[in-house]
Image (cartoon, rainbow, N blue to C red; front, side, top):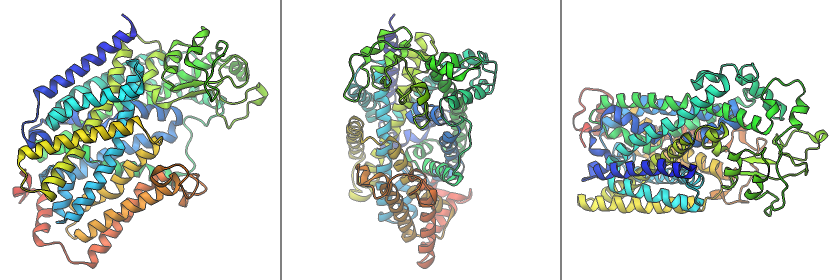
Length: 613
């Protein structure tokens, strides 16, 4: 059976499973659609939350970031994990006890203000739409490689599958679909990691293999990796960072942004009791840890595998580094290139030294090569390093970080079924989070805007129709943006986390833990955090990310106190807290019934109607 047929079998079987679950668990009421009826078991909800949490960014991109940046990019791992702990400990149980369907529901009722609800809806929609672009794009990358279709067709297929199980199933269908997707993605992630760890170190447990001895060289794996990347002009893989303030703020931005992301928060509204919200949070952390503890090993081993594929003699004991570097793999004669001088994919097949996985991925455009010095060999190194004495004129290989996890089984020559499995896993990761984000958008429009603010008398049937139409519209918008990406993946992630962290997270925290913060303070704080964060990001990345409209170059020399635009969400959150408390202290106290409500949410006694939908 061909690799394509195996990929089709794995992906097709997973799609059939997702759609079958959606038909079985079709939402019959608004409570089914928004919170899966409120009766999901904590273990089931924990698994669904983990799938909702671990998006294409976690499955596809995180290991690629760790592969390329090493310790410097560990902020992503720490920030996302830490943010979940904050969410689980400080937000989830209390929001479940409040007993509403959505995040804007809580903010609107707690701060007794339509303006606060509207600001929360805007923040939620902008953050969620921004985030979902990456999921649709990630699904397109996976489809284009494993189903051998164009990236455009890949995104349309992903949109169709999400439409079938999310629009009709709502949260009920999404919950049980995400359980299946978690099982698929965790198996797909860990099995290749086990194979590769055993190949490189003889230890089948990836997180232990990363600290074991590299079999071919006889030295610790991380030490060998450091030797290879330093020889290629890069910084040590395990080197510390210079700007600790920026790293701390970036980690905090990811943490508060993660804790404020509404598509994960709404998962805790689906369980029967407050205690179940706590238990499901704990189970979710266990399920998340299975992937997050494996990711550093996958990243480090992928980086070593890629480097020693290009420079095979660097894999063993190296006495003469320059000689080992000059023995990089050869390629065939390049006769046809694109406008930028990159060899067309068909040119990669002309020499046996070029591994088959490179030929395959070259067809997707995610690996590119050009022979700058016409020596018939492939060089890959840090362009800022000087290798002119070797006749090198620049790094000739460009590898997209997002392919490292998906290509790992092929790099390590694993069986064809493992490649098919990771295809299904990568697609499952993208689709599971896309569905959760789209439901958060749909709920905000149908419930918080239409039901609560525009037409309170709308029937349940009418609200269900509005929810499904708004989700369909959100899918079309996400598909369009995925087909026409603005070309700023890192910036969109920064914007999504920045908006959520600088606007929603402080409002949620103050709404739960402060009886003194009133409606005026909450609105002023959210707007301050939102506007400051947007202004800082746009200053360096361009207004609405339009190229050439930035006021300052995005370089460390221009950053205020060395704070990157990607790290500013934490600063925006601090200003949000400060403004909210200041304005609240200068204006009237919240009504007594609101203070009593806060008391009832925070303490077991007197919860009353707060726990009922």
